[in-house]
Amino acid sequence: MRLALVVLLAALASCVSLKEDTAIDRLQPCKHSEGSTEGYCGTFDVWEDRDAKAGRKIALKIIVFPALKRKAAKDPLFFLAGGPGQGAAAISEMGREMMRRIGADRDLVFVDQRGTGKSNPLECKNEKDDEDDDATEEAYLKRMRACMEKLQPKADLTKYTTTIAMDDLDDVRQYLGYGKINLYGGSYGTRAALVYARRHAANTRAVILDGVAPTDMQIPLFMARDSQRALDLLFRDCAANKACNERFPRLRERLEALLAAPAKKITYTHPRTGASKSVDVRRLTLSGVLFATLYSPKIAALVPLLIDQAEKGNYTGFFALGTAFDPAGTTIAQGMHFSVVCAEDAPRVVAGAIEKETANTFLGGEMAQWRMKTCAFWPKGKVEPDYFNNTPSDLPALILSGELDPVTPPSWGQQIAGQWKNSKHITVPATGHGTAVSGCVPKLMAQFLNEGTAAKLDAACVQNVKRPPFFLGPAGPDPMQ
Image 1 (cartoon, helix red, strand yellow):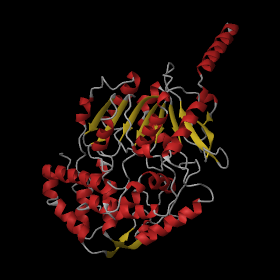
Image 2 (tube, rainbow, N blue to C red; image 1 turned 180 degrees about the vertical axis):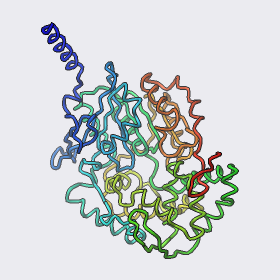
Image 3 (cartoon, rainbow, N blue to C red; image 1 turned 180 degrees about the horizontal axis):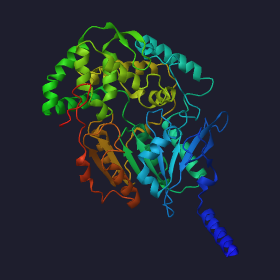
Image 4 (cartoon, one colour; image 1 turned 45 degrees about the horizontal axis):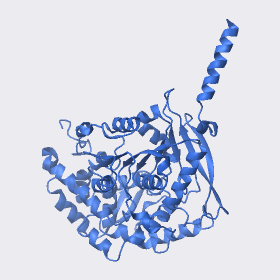
């Protein structure tokens, strides 16, 4: 019996060995310092200058979570992060949770795009961790120029464009031993997915685009326009809600008056440190935080209350949210962000366009102008003219848009859906930037990948998603809502 048991165990071990993927063979179980210990970690070296194949190399960090099912699909899902500037491997634990249904059937692969995460990150962190340091245009541009000069010895800032990064990604695919792969892209990650699918269509099985930011988007030109749309929907929904409308009437007019008021210095208690601080409250101070809240309807539920409190001189809520939205820039590699945007978007923004597109918006043109002025001195990589064409494709695509998204609203998704004949575009109600965990969307994404087509998807279930109730006071929403 002992001999039989040994033989059986050996046979099982042999089966497991035969099942092992090349991806796992080339990686090691992650250490706690690397990420989730349920994943497999490693790196893959690419030339910074892919054309010359000489000089500096970049070690791209890789994390793979093997499929949970024994009989798993051979085609993995590669997760492409947003920003630009966010590292996929750096957020792999969150990404894995988002893709949990999909991860049952296929491997989940997270690769830090060059310039992000731990793959030669081009970071421009505010070393003082002080959100006030960027309060003026002069201070902001001074910090960005200093960051550029600090980065240049460690990176050729012209070699971090999307096209180059997606060729890196295909090298990683081949290194890990995968054939055709599926792509999930969120926000800027949708642009990366579109570029990969265009350049490596033969290696692409299906694509999920969540919050579409196409190659011709011209970041940051339409940020003010699209965020104004999201704010208008918030005002509409508050006015339609009896409790919100009674508690916060005439929100639009009240916000306009608040933003039009002259800059003033106030003293407040810093929400993170508890220290008393003085700060100049300018239009951009408030509009920048307001813009960020619109990404998530759960956070945007606070907006009417914040406006009401600020009218009374209480800005603590605004500053608390400003602190929560990472003023030190620890999740986005801003240097990589500008290496992409300054090469791919800013050169296409013509004179006068920002003034035109930001007119009569709460955000105004200041934020966009600061970014454009950064691009005036930031090194720019080469981008081919056809890069900006939305090339038609036969690949299966599930295109997702949040109805309330302030930066990638449904119009951008519809633009791509019109070019991809095997696509399905779903707008998810009451959802902001990113729909992957909204309502039944996880189920729809998993079904799409398992079937390899969106043709049979029944998207009626997304209509069950409702906007979170508005906060009526510090205690929260009306419990009867």
